[in-house]
Length: 438
Image (cartoon, rainbow, N blue to C red):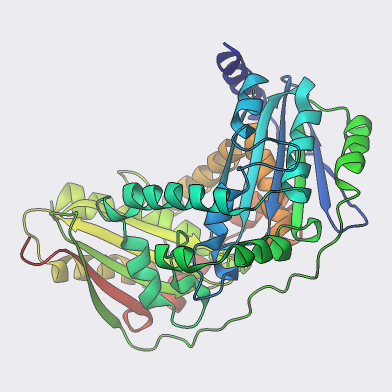
């Protein structure tokens, strides 16, 4: 009943939040370096407490991959004051929900509670930061959990190793070259001390942003934050990765064999700029033009008109240090992969040589306006956005300015950015194939 009630409140918060244009917030730093962001929204009695740590798979030792994702699980094990295995029980018994997720660049933990439990959420996140218990029992338990997740989501999932196959060819020096879930062999070989050292290095207040959003009383919440987080010692300075890749000047041809698929896939991947650069926004728009919906260029051409592909997509994977622009397609009726490559390239050449129509441009602007509203339609969505904008851009107010960036992109910029990055000599061409002799 409590979960149903909370879900209803979140829906209500989403409905009212979707009407808002400006996201108001307050931010400040504690002396220990913890960055605090507060967003007050009284439309529903719901509160989100969340912490984003600026640590992801790219921060790992190349011989110990998978640590960041492992900690996504490990830091739910228990703390000095939260008995092992009781974390989720405490949250659910108070009508709340929680989760976490990890990328190559950051790890994000959050709780959603009825607003009268904001203090509980803050206490639990402070416990995770200050008093985690990292022992062999917890490591062994979560090792099995992560292995099972890898079996289900990667090893036994059709096309489950697609991202791995792309990354290990597209990047040769930067740690984006390994999968976020990492290597089970590396996790098996790690010592308890290595896990404890990783925690001490990265899960510290000066490498984190705390966001409290929803139905809050800010003076009271500030006092709670000081009480629970103020005494946590500052960690050593965290120096982020600075690894560079040489430009790709000749098409990389590769094959990857997957025992879990029946149909091949053709993949084209281009290494593109960091999400911090303006061109990354333009590449977002290019991916929308090519494959967002059934009226998009690639879908209409390859799936509807020519019946050459079962599925097709163009995706701009923006990350902190580099991006990856990926087009992919699953052929239909035994269409040769080379033919699909040719058809996709033809559409990209059109973007490189012709301005998109005014009508298509207007549609594009409407799509991004709707996406912006949707992303910030719930308090939970706003909390996540605030944490992201601070952690990566150092500009929390980008939540109110990013839509203007998209609005100001021109048709000429779309043409020039496509011409700059999406060329055959700058890419990986990967044939993702059924395993031989299966």
